[in-house]
Length: 191
Image 1 (cartoon, helix red, strand yellow):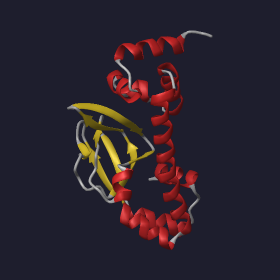
Image 2 (cartoon, helix red, strand yellow; image 1 turned 90 degrees about the vertical axis):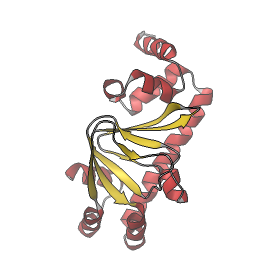
Image 3 (spheres, helix red, strand yellow; image 1 turned 30 degrees about the vertical axis):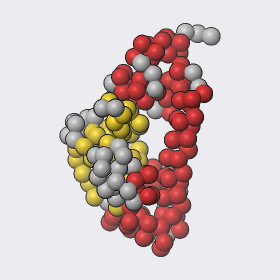
Image 4 (tube, helix red, strand yellow; image 1 turned 120 degrees about the vertical axis):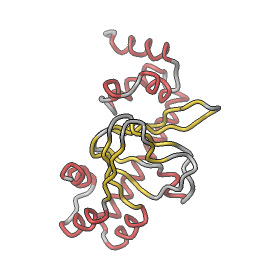
């Protein structure tokens, strides 16, 4: 649980009492390769910290999976739009390798945020970071060339090429495998 609190304290420092309240709220869940944590249509009521492993977020469009996110070790994951709107998930979150999640009830987090200012800041920061990432990705799909989107992904998530399948990376970037190959080539070329 040390990595969890290191990440949380990097976002906003917590006092001992606040850390104890969070620790009591954590539920641990282990997922095997291919296990779904969240499926489309499920009510979502938890935020997860990926203690170890890899979760891929995707949605279905015309029967095809479209990757919407990669969550590796020490990252927070969830369907924040579903959590915030209290609506069923529109996406799937699936373990792409054996994964350990620290689950936090969103209702418990909101209750703690009422009592502890630092937890309120932490929760607000997680939601804000998710929105900003979504906004930049959405905008990038429309205005940024594929090789630049690929370079940005490598900068933001350097483990992605080691742990994610190329077709999932291509899907996330909104390109074909052939375009991904060209983007990789453009990144490797000097100047």
